[in-house]
Length: 121
Image 1 (cartoon, one colour):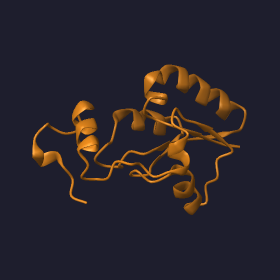
Image 2: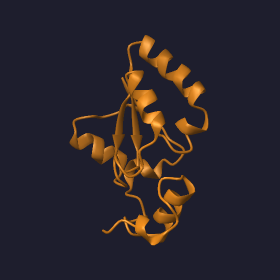
Image 3: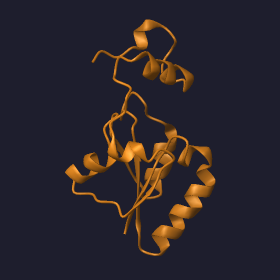
Image 4: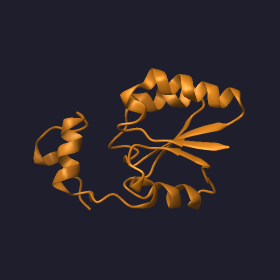
């Protein structure tokens, strides 16, 4: 069974807990992957490396709906653990140049607050 785990407001709220849960799933023969709306380069988090060292493949959808994104790669999770179930079936409302996405990246420390951090569409 493939289990898709969300990152923001799920895994990153309690990484130690989800590391334990991931190990338990893996010990029972299941595959755990991480599926996040994040951009693979612009929104990289060091916790991604921690997950990959545990055998958890990280998929950054860059705001695309997670289920169709993964399905296009031939990956069909049976279980989803996500605080925002709509992200599984709907694209993000925040586009690359949206002020909301820019503010989120500033809040997360991914970019500075200046205009240079806004990504062109």
